[in-house]
Length: 110
Image 1: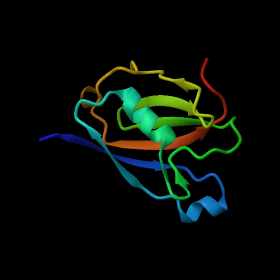
Image 2: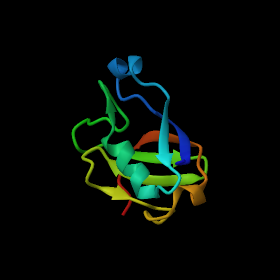
Image 3: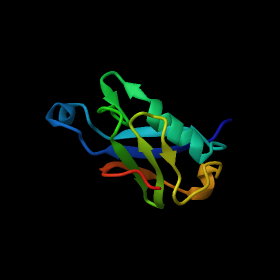
């Protein structure tokens, strides 16, 4: 039996048209998943017109803030990713997160 980690995900809206599709989602990851697996899931997952990280031109930055600190900062180009607080290979079951909020920020960390 594979154990799963469940994480609630919600993000800020990017425009008025986004408001009708933007809602909370439950992410399920295997118990042996690492932080990088989660961030790849968030940056590449779409449900119809809803994107966990919406593309708004390749210059929008998103802080993925959890109930245990900032997990990553990603660009909507899906190429630039920074891990300010945790090693990208850290197991999710050691970080112990249950919620993530995607929030737009003004610049990518250096």
